Figure 1 (cartoon, rainbow, N blue to C red):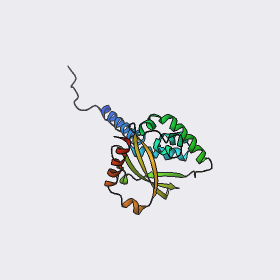
Figure 2: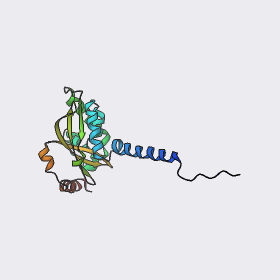
Figure 3: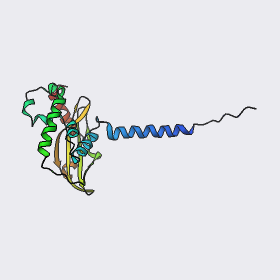
Figure 4: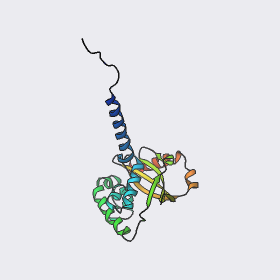
Length: 184
């Protein structure tokens, strides 16, 4: 006598689906540096730990040019190509600049995704600084895509009123100006 064949979906398939979805979420939320929010989080986590090398990896080469005259005459393409050397210079610059600065141990940031604006080459990310899990200030980061990865170009202090004035058109104007600058 033959055994009846069970019909239905194997239970192990449900476990596999959950593992795959969890992996995709982890990658998108914490490792996908084309996501501007991940870049901002990574930068500030490094800042709070005084990890200047990781900070430099999350900054745009165009941020570094403001403080390093040896790179000012390079074209945008040359700057992006010379990223490893510029990153090294930024790491040295930040470590000198931050040598006297002591970050309180209980500092963190909270990204405010409601205000994040993205375009093909630029993004705006708003976040608040928190100390002992209470808000103590806000900033917005302007990010620029360099070789398929978002990097922080500028950080601007903001308040809630300024944040509420943002609309979806803000990023469109910036996108156009950066396309011209980068020749894209």
